[in-house]
Length: 397
Image (tube, rainbow, N blue to C red; front, side, top):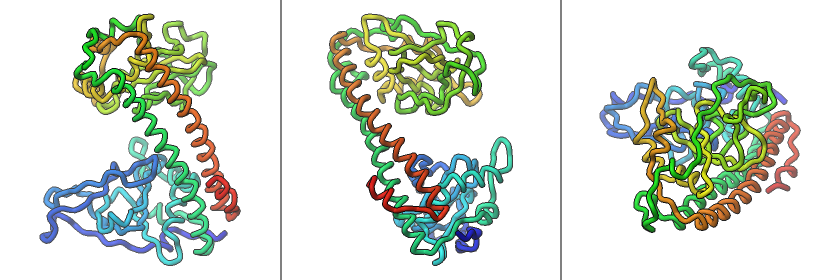
């Protein structure tokens, strides 16, 4: 398959300076932070006054343009501009790619998401603390160019599988919402304690709250170490990026067992206080930026984990954290001092059963999503080598 520089197949775009415009009061601005990096979409465009426009607000975009973040290319901040954002202004932190008739926009969108493109941009990035590429590097990179009809066929196949992946992710997000809905249904809003249960401190519901190990973890070792990045904002434990230690170096106090809650005590102000319950059976250690909370026998950990992930509690945590050198912190003593209602144990156990049913369903969705992710990567690879067989994607659809 012929390889051509992207710049040969894209058009020059128009730019403007909002501060010098007398005819426009406000405009829609697409910043680097507007990109949803997981779903590769523009999720948060901003309405900005022309008089206070950011200095990077310069590039006029159209529906169908492809935005490629030039900053930290390993994170692959890319998105297609939807028709609803036709005429918006994009940051100069993006390379804006507008296809000519020789290049299908949807095909280009999938190419700039591919591991081949990401790897090439990451290889060419310069700057240790703020790695970036230039427009010249992006446009000078090579793209496989089959016929336009073949480009459309490839884009359709990848779109089909990508849509299935998006639906699985949406289903997982709905399960997060369902868990919180069940919590509110059974226990009421924790801000009001409508059932007038006894008010306690978290310290009264637990047997211990311990800091994790300060020992350095590495790629080698026989026991995984949970770090703050392994706790998701939605309250799950993500085992996808682990470091390890030798088991002999890990004392009992730094081990996690089923039912323990991990609380992220140090992070950015938005993420400090992330919490998740460990429902597995394998042996894990946990790092020093986490607090391991272990329940007493009179209370169920699923109740406390859901309480810590409730919107009310997240507001409480944001209000109490202290910032030190750009990082927010909530120590174990402060965590234990938070007020919490104590429902009857039998109600907590009933709640736990319902949560376990949700987690069982979540496992099914995660397995299916993993299969679709693997299929998508395989199809990408084959498509850009000119070896795509459309039926393999259609059978999944």
